[in-house]
Length: 336
Image (spheres, rainbow, N blue to C red):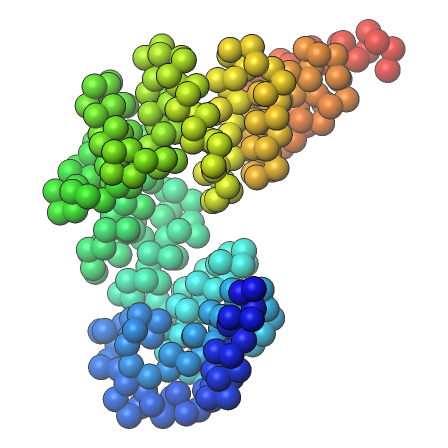
């Protein structure tokens, strides 16, 4: 078991962990100054004992103990931006986003150009608010993952030209970066350069068979170009093994369900929609479509449950509002 593997390391780290001594190590020359910015947590200098201990405790699910380690470090090093960034990242990982933001802000008030804090802080914001933070991070230090994240945001916000420019630079510098190539395929699809998009995605799948994002976007491409059988095959292959991350897999399973429903595989579509909403309970389109299936089958209470959940997420959706009105009439006619 994982716990058995980690226990000797945890015991040793606990024995050696002393925030005061870590401060002495750093003061003695463990770090070269704020400009290096990421000595901690990136293989640099002193002070790694606490971070490693917290990481192992976190991996074992001992969240409270892991947080206690970070809190003891922050108490001793309240002006250390790397420790604050580590703690903020931990908070973000366990879903305490507001607390993570506050600690990223604290870190950036001490070190305004801290690359990791800038990138991670951006990821806690809405798309529009995150873009300038990612740009700021790239101006401080060009990193491939930051550039790929910014390109994805450009695509999500409809800034196709900006995405194309950034991805051209990224793929020229790193031609084997698979995520960047998938994003470039998305750009080509939006530009209606279907052949170019397909070639990019097939290239990714040659390099990494089963790449979920590539399969998903290849399925979207096939659906767009009316190759519905191939679209379903690609979506089925991607959905079959998709478990993490939950939001990505939920979107993929919902897309798979859409295609199954189009092909009149209603039972399988319901199963895929149910899986999607278990992974991402706020996926409104999956709730809408699942509600519509139950509606047509006469399962009105189940339909209403899913319509109501979709309405909470998307209160102005005209199709949803129309379906709700039809459902109410049907329920009234049944005598409820």
